[in-house]
Image (cartoon, rainbow, N blue to C red; front, side, top):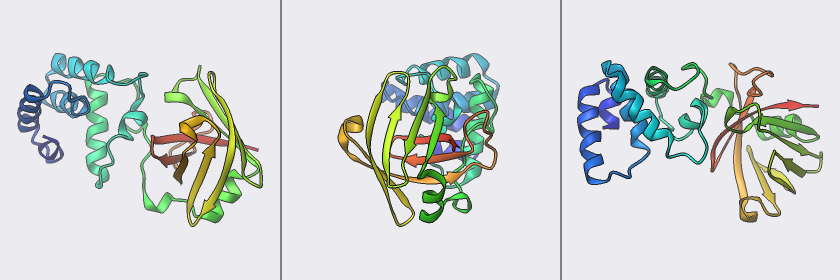
Length: 209
């Protein structure tokens, strides 16, 4: 179904995805592709219904960026096709409202250190303005994280071009590996001038001195 969707064969994509759902109705992720395919076919009700079923599978209602972080397409055209279809299906926002993971925008280890160490990262949880998070990182790597419901401290360091963070309690105290990218389409107002790619998806942020 995903392959036929990427080739623009939306009728075939709908047929195969619905067949898959008869075998496993709890298959959640594929509903995003189904909603988008229906939208391209002009089946507005089916697109809306599939989108709502898809969104109910998340713990908190995600924005487009949160959804697209689940679909790491190799070809940017496939990602754009899905994003446009989800907006057509009724997801709020614009099709360009997601972070594109492109090699030319990846920061080196030295650039990460200069940008983040000794500064504060700020962002929005699921893009919601009523749920902001911040992370202060000292020059020697000590970190302090907080949002509306969580607070923790820990440490971070750089190996090669990757950023590592280990909290005392968050994420079960496991070592977290991440890469940092510039977001050329981001703004300080939306707090998405940069983004981190890590085990839990893609997290946009801006930096405050």
